[in-house]
Image (tube, rainbow, N blue to C red; front, side, top):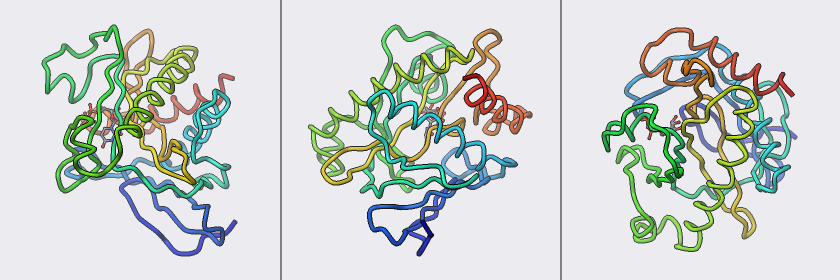
Length: 236
Ligand code: UDP
């Protein structure tokens, strides 16, 4: 399958059309951004690592009955995907308090949440991706109530699969962000799942092994991403 025109260039990926109108190619870049583009940089080999991790996790989810856009890993940086009409909702699932949950509600970082929290954000950089509820999403016309219900239940199911997978690899899945899209009347999981979109802490030491190392200049960013890749791909 060959790339034709570039459809889109985002912060961490480019998406290309192909000769098959149902298929696109996602190309993972090394560029890194944080705080809605206010911090910019690059993480060596991040594109290769995130593509490998995402392909593995999407395959794991497919084998657990979760439909995703993944067709196959094409190369180090390329993933062949089904074309999605992206739903402009970012679904965040939280198992442990961190990040904006700490800032917004005053939880102590690291607090275990008895029941996972599922949040919806409007996918709109100009508005800084505001937190929203089901009625906002419907009023804005980004999804129907039925679709929102599917996104939430899908996100909860994905959380159970991923939490167990990471725990087996001595990683705590603190929180993560998902994006979904429509394809031929079905809702599929899209985008990526990687240390860019998840918070992952070492089970024993709570060391942060994710994009927070870049966000807060903690150092050892590349090593953290490679360590996650090693645990996800080599410990099978
Ligand atoms: N996240 C993401 N993209 C975004 C916003 C959040 O991938 O545009 C991920 C983030 O990496 C974390 C989770 O979603 O794993 C929750 O992020 P949070 O709301 O705490 O915001 P942040 O602290 O990242 O600004």
